[in-house]
Every structure is written in structure tokens, then in C-alpha cells.
Length: 298
Image (cartoon, rainbow, N blue to C red; front, side):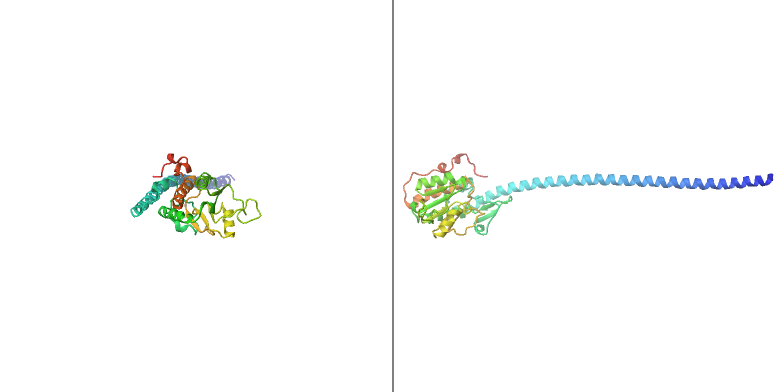
């Protein structure tokens, strides 16, 4: 009995020993797995950290590159504007050797006669010299000088009492009023009442042989009436205007008081000379009050 008992104890010891060895192996494997898992997590976190830093650096580099590009573009626009003025001066100066412009090219530029809009209609494309880097169209200033001369020839066919002028744009009121007052031409500012030239039943009805408008869109009432009774129309047109129904187009900036002031100053002076009308010599300051303080672009 005692031997059997001892044998059983030995057997149990063996079983326990084997179980203990197996448990140690399992624990070692678990510890190993845990260590590997921790290392993998650390590697992943470190990789993400590096990626985050890399992305941040890339964003910073892109931002710097964009800022540099913006500065370069700003410089280019400024440079293009300066080059544009130099090109215009040079082009017209070269042509001045063959012909003399009505006023110095600097005066045209000072009055912004050459500046159009960002829109160029098919009707006005032929008068545009170039487009600036900021999108604004630039009129051919030499061609403008020619067209002003032609405008005087066209207007001089009509006596002052045969002409009616409309200018709804406030920027032109002072200039057109001075033009009308000096030459005795009937002028409408603010609004031309539709039907004035066509409806004989109106108390203020009158007849004219030539209509002048400062913008085909704003002064469309007079344009429509003139087309109905089939009298010629003289139109001051910017790059964004359509010229349908207009017999003579004067391509200039019609948005600026400076430009309109210069145009009507020249038309007043040259029309009077051409028609032999005795008037007091007009001065540019009568049409553009702050003329002396204006500076031509460089």
C-alpha cells in the first residue's frame, strides 16, 4: 500500500512538473506576443508621427510657394501696367514723328481715355490695342486720336441747333452741360424722355437732324427714337458697348469724368474752329476741374 501511494505521488509530481513547464512556455509566448504587439504599436505611432510632421512640412512648403507665386503675380501685374503705358507712349510717339496728335499723348493717358473695361464686345474689338494683366482692355490711343479728328468732321456737317445730346451717366454731366452751353446745343442729362423726337402730340416735342449719346445702353431712349425717325447717331462707346444703330462710333472710356471731360473739351474746341463759331477759348479746367492735380500714369 505504501509503495502504491509513493508511486501515485511520483506520478502526480511528474504531471505537475510537465504542467508547470507547459505553463511557463505559454507565459513566455504570451509575453513575447505582448512585446511584439507593443513594438508594432510603437512603430505605427512613430510612423504616423513622422507622416504628420511630413504633411505639416509639405503644407508649410506649399503655403510658402503660394505666397511667393502671389507676390510674383502681383509684381507681374504692376509690371504689365507699366509696360503697357510705356508701349502706348512708344507706339504713339513713333507715329507722332509722322503726324502730330491733337494733344500730347500724356494728356490722353492722364484723362484715362485709353482704359476700357474687362469686357470686349465683337463690335469694339477692332479698336482695342491690348489687354492688361489685370484683364482691363486698352484702347489704341493713336486710333482714338484719329477718331476724334473724324468725329469733328462728322459733327461739323450739322449746325448746333440741329443736334441733340443725351448723357444719363453722372460722370459726364458737367462736361456735356459745358459743351451744350458753349455751342448752343440742346442737352439732356439724367434722362431723355422717350418719344420726345417721335411723338408730335407731346408738348415738348421737337425735331433734330443728329443725335449724340454718351453710352448706347444708358442713353438707349434717344438711340431708339433716333433710329425710328432715321436720323444719324453719334455714339461714344466703351469696350463693353454694342454699336447697333450708331452711325459714328467714338471709341473711348465713357465711364470716367476725366475721359468724358477731355472728349467734350476737344469736341467743343475743334467743332467751333471747324464751323467758324466765335466762342471764348475753352479751357480744359472748365471740363475737368481738378485737371492740374491729375498725374499721368508712369
